Image 1 (cartoon, rainbow, N blue to C red):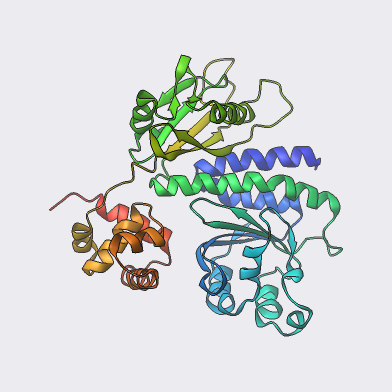
Image 2 (cartoon, helix red, strand yellow):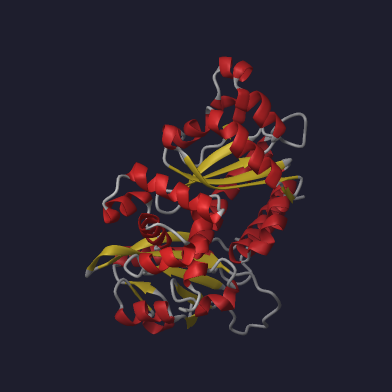
Length: 382
């Protein structure tokens, strides 16, 4: 397959998968095919050193999701693995050959590398760290190459060109998860009340916006729809926004594929900044020049987090008062540091409380707990 054609196919697949999780398995399989890898692993973590915590981990092998390999690594090998803290220390976007994360002695003695990485097909893989939202770290790994001769220069160039787009895919999914809108779809997002959503046509004109986005645009604090197009209030921010929109909405017939991106823009009257995620939308069918949704803009306002009553939540989920407080603050989108400050707890105690809640609710991490909280909280009052 021609490298440019391969890149365009993967980019289009990532755009679909970002808005619909049903496309992720096929996208992962396509990535393996065009990159010549036997599988790939996507991880999201926070913290560093001995306090490194995995928030999401998904392993695909030969185009199939492998929950067994995910459990095997996380339960058996991750607690003993020398590599994860070292990945965090490497520069973002740097491709790392898996053996380079271990010392010469560890390559012979490491339990995780010699047994765990062999069983999960990653002893000769490639790993890179990417920056996620709110201090989260994205780690993307491509498993051992299909070719026994190792990685070729053309493969490495293709993989490096995909890195910013994989990062953007995860950032969009993270933003949708915070708004409990992972399965909403393009049209359904307009009904979401927790995140601003704007639909743009191919010319960058606003086609539709939901209530949170309309409220932000009406106030004009940081973002407006002047003359039917999106503009940032601060000139420097507006220049960056227009360049980003131009990349997401290339002119018809352009050889350059559309690409998404993120930025934060200032609000002159407020200290917090708006967070924008611009995401191209692939055309489902020929439009013959008609106006259709060609790009999606997610607008995250840190001043408009959902408010959850910890007392009611404790009653719904059978939690202690302290567990209810930390679970409610987590579901409002607050990191552990903010939860500790707001509740008057130590960060270590917050993490301990969350672990107790995980056990009670039968979930495996913060993302699953937030989904459980938002789902339970949506039940009608008795």
